[in-house]
Amino acid sequence: MKLSVLSLIGHAPHPLNGRRPSPAERFEEVIETGVVAERLGFDAYSIGERHAGPFLHRGRLRTRPPRADRDAAVVRRGHRSGGAA
Image 1: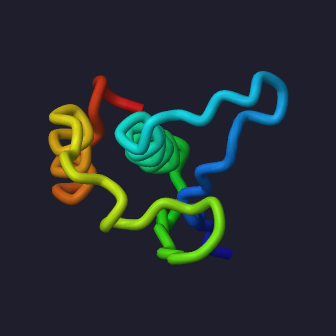
Image 2 (image 1 turned 180 degrees about the horizontal axis):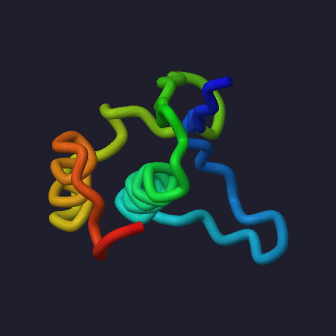
């Protein structure tokens, strides 16, 4: 059996405090989720794209945070950040 994690990059307000993270914060969370999924041994991490409703897509983020760029490159190369799992 193969297991994967899927994110549609939801961007709704927090249900308890009503705060909506910035697009950069939300994209950083998406990258961190991918890194954790890899550490936990999931077979895949998929990101879908929606253009309606409380979802982010590439057109909603003008600049990517430097950390997200670095971590995305690490995930693409298949290396684990932060040491061995």
